[in-house]
Image 1 (cartoon, helix red, strand yellow):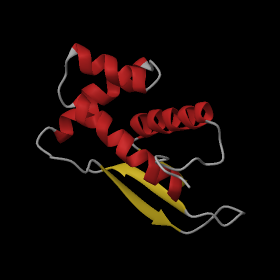
Image 2 (image 1 turned 60 degrees about the horizontal axis):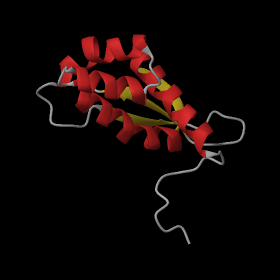
Image 3 (image 1 turned 180 degrees about the horizontal axis):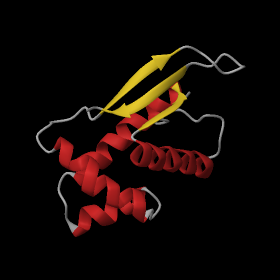
Length: 118
């Protein structure tokens, strides 16, 4: 029974899963649109939306919180606070969208784009 086991494990240990999500978060912030599997995009969405919600209010505490979640990546943190979060000050939520695409991988897994809403 999977009581209190939230989210997908992707067949990886906890530390590798954390590193995977951090890498996806950084890539999405820097490139603003990435292609990944549908399952990874669905797991990434709530994490990145919480970061954008924190970044909407520029304070030292929020900068430290976001930097810790991104693994102290200064470039991604600066871009999130300077370029991405100001776009969504008036928006109450829903900062990203997942666009499904055809399975192009050789193993047939479902592919998707995850991008920030314009």
